[in-house]
Image 1 (tube, one colour):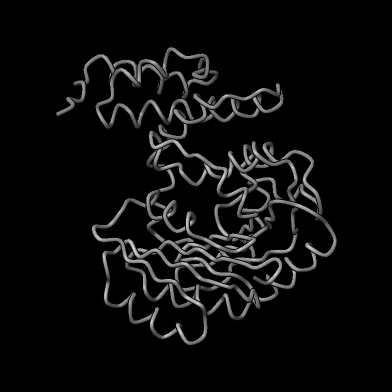
Image 2 (image 1 turned 30 degrees about the vertical axis):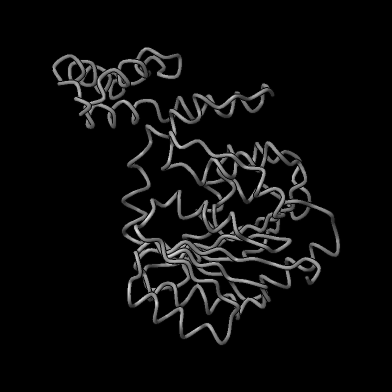
Length: 310
């Protein structure tokens, strides 16, 4: 096998048009993978099969159709588990690599010895138009603009501060295989992988030039806040040792506690809402608006019905 060979894993679900751009981008980015593992969670969507067939002469594709379909986490775990390259990368079907990505990875490998490579990224619209202003704002919002090219001093801090995206990264296969995700929080399987990568390896390399684009579709904009309570649960159960990491984690939990309570109340999870309200992460309201929200949630919890488990 070629040294520093690459496996690219793509979980997909009935988004053939986006998948076409993701596959084209692998070629345009000059990544030269030994395999492109596509996990089709649409149970054999005909449009997806047609797109895959059109690229089989240009890329070394392994096309896996899940029948019956798995959930997203199951699909991701399945394709990562069979990757054979020295390096494994994930790109979701609606995102794509940028030109020069392959060269940036190869340059980094010539310079340094690391287990995990990640970069800044651009934001694009639903139709694939790159958005420069939004990209700069996103980089600033998630603190990536603070990172310098080269070794990352604290990989777990980078994850906890949301500087890492679950797209476009490259990890040694051994590191990918060392991860054990918890099925209790399936909506945050991406976060689980990144946290485990950071806990299992301190040798991370950051490329400050963008190597991929993340698409702002209506679907992921809608989903971005749906499972805040799962993030709250996952971070609450995350065992950390360094005070700095605990402080960052607790700051995140404090930020999302009021949102998580609302989500649990909407879902009828009254006990979970109460537990969160009474936790140290739900700080005393400091504004009139915060106090009003707190009172509303208390009244809501008192009069709401508890969800029945069948």
